[in-house]
Image 1: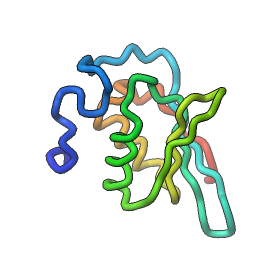
Image 2: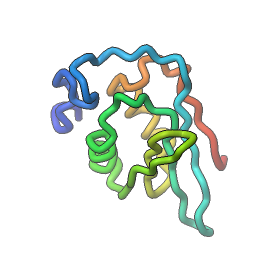
Image 3: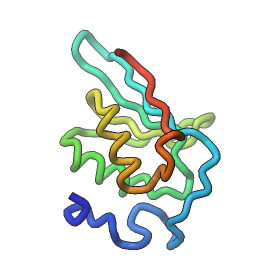
Image 4: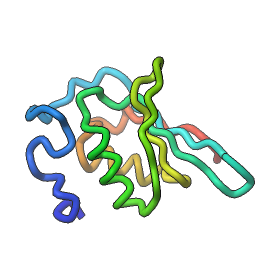
Length: 111
């Protein structure tokens, strides 16, 4: 799957050429129920040097859903995806090394 998304190239998801992250904060994956059957997944706390548009494009391709980037004054850039994709987003963040340590990812939402 990484060949299709071309994630092995240096700097694929980051704006600068340094792929290392000194992650000291947590990434939060939240699910909110919009209507009776519809849900929205939010990804908060992503590093600011991340290329959000490319990450969103790759997530939309992998998850077959639509999404957008929301600019929040308190949280920074937040990725919003249609549907409940908590586990898939968690796996994507670990596979692409956006979060090198899975312990820094917290999943919240409806059980």
